Image 1 (cartoon, one colour):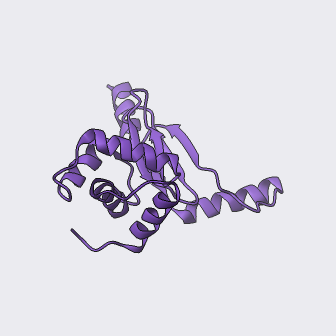
Image 2 (image 1 turned 30 degrees about the horizontal axis):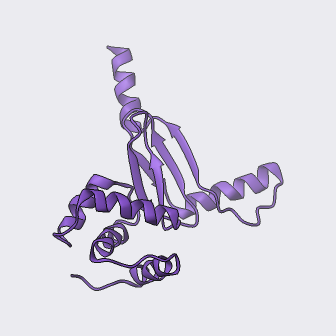
Length: 155
């Protein structure tokens, strides 16, 4: 097994404070989430990646672990389209997500973009933001799906 990162140690500490043990299967799930911090992953994808770390892990265990992590606010869950596909990612202080309603793609914009938006709000509305802790999820069409729709209209 690979070196435990500081983030993984912090998550272990959070779980312990919430009354949970860090089992090898939970450790594998956490390791996958930590290695893919900027990506939303389905439980199935997490399972496939965790299986390489811990052969003893099962899909049901991954789901249970993700629910525990979500309950402890260590991960965030996002339903990415009408099909209700749930994706998971380590929780961040601020998230600005663009979710394609057609294909389910999730685009996580960087912190610089978030700061730019909050700065525009302050300038245009005259509202002094002291703390911004909520996530913002905007639904629409990604560039690829938009291009496909425009192509269909032209043909």
